[in-house]
Image 1 (tube, rainbow, N blue to C red):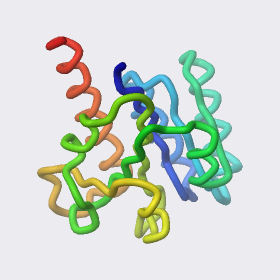
Image 2 (cartoon, rainbow, N blue to C red; image 1 turned 90 degrees about the vertical axis):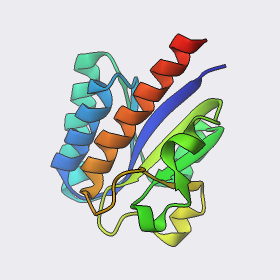
Image 3 (cartoon, rainbow, N blue to C red; image 1 turned 30 degrees about the vertical axis):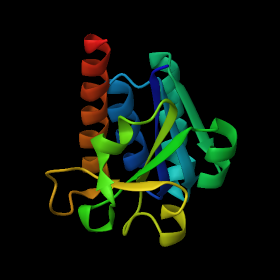
Length: 158
């Protein structure tokens, strides 16, 4: 059984951030993208634009009220929360590659990121080599690229 990765952008206020995160996820080949706890203009403008993009590309998109709703509906085998190095427990690729089945990869959409309570729903991981704050879209792009590359190399070796 392989790993099915679903990117999740949680607690977002910016419509541009929703759309850019969706572009990154779909552009890297992920079939589904999820937004949880979208507020303000992110909910009013960003979510409809991301859904429109998903339809155009033949991909899946979901907007759910909060992170626990995503866990309930998607029933992941594992949840990784991508955070800055100082908040992470383990490197992203070490943990991600031990998972089988559905893997939710959660990114905080607003500063300062994910709360302590939210970090308890899964494993907080960091991207090895990223030392400073590169923002949520930077984390989304690098983490999803590294996951895609690692999963592709695993498929080739099997």
